[in-house]
Length: 129
Image 1 (cartoon, helix red, strand yellow):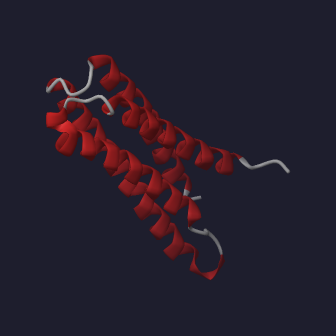
Image 2: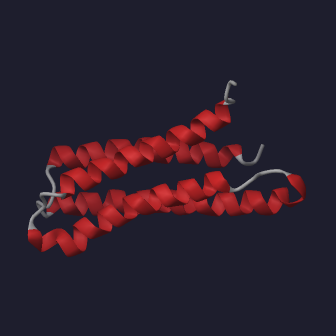
């Protein structure tokens, strides 16, 4: 059975968010101890929250009698993911400035998170169809 394009986009945004979280968990594993309970834990938690919110958004059934309500619920989960991506980008920048992560690691985090954000925004706009 062939999946429609919306299903592919939804799964791809979640796949990219998982890639982002895996990368963050990997690069922060060796971060200096003085950052482990501040910047590192925030970045790790935000990356996992993003996955959670996208999965929750994907789990909302759009259709039936409660379509408008369900679209609003899905929009809320998607917006939470988008907001956490913005916060993650900022904390990543601070982590780089404080020498918690390397410049190239921040650049990779920013690139992947930008991709996830663009996909999430496009998905959210598609809810209005």
